[in-house]
Length: 294
Image 1 (tube, rainbow, N blue to C red):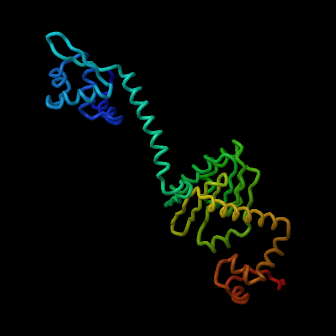
Image 2 (image 1 turned 180 degrees about the horizontal axis):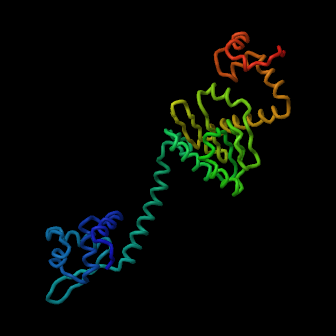
């Protein structure tokens, strides 16, 4: 007999479909051998009024067998556990296969349309690591140096197994030993525009995760398999990378002088109400070149 406590075995059998009385009687017979109804009731502590009803159910399930002994009436024995469990395993697998097909047809929405909300830094970073580790081909990621330590190991593991990484890093010039790593040149402006830090991840063009790390440790976001969201996020990340590479190919001072000379781009990049150049100059002179660039 198993060294596992009898109560634990009863609970385990209940998890695969036995009732409590069925589990007690089956274990009693498995331990004691052939018994009649009265002996089973006494040994299993199942009420005599329930014993024969329970035995009939066990016979139907193929868990016990019965035979007649001349002059002693019917006796019952437990069928071998391997045989009983294999029958339950086949039945359970058949049921699960059936439900997978039928419930899939009943579903009112596609799984990829779901959008799952996240709250809190631990939840967001844990889900981000899961998405990175599940990626098989390509990852586009925009994140800040603040979040990099928590994600570095997962990113390097993905990179080592051949996933193509395109990472835009905001903040400190933290090193990450991957081929395609880009550093954003105006992190402070972005931080002011969005009121914190933004993490955007697209894995294999399908799984999308967006999270905001706002002031006061307010962290929230979402993840989704929605293909339209994935396309929008990947396009945003791609254009961000291309823009930073274009800046590297030109004089950054000239680039900054150009966008700061246009009120429409100031509004987009800085993210405030449209203001005149003089108003901007009085509020934030460090944003502007010292010369009046056209």
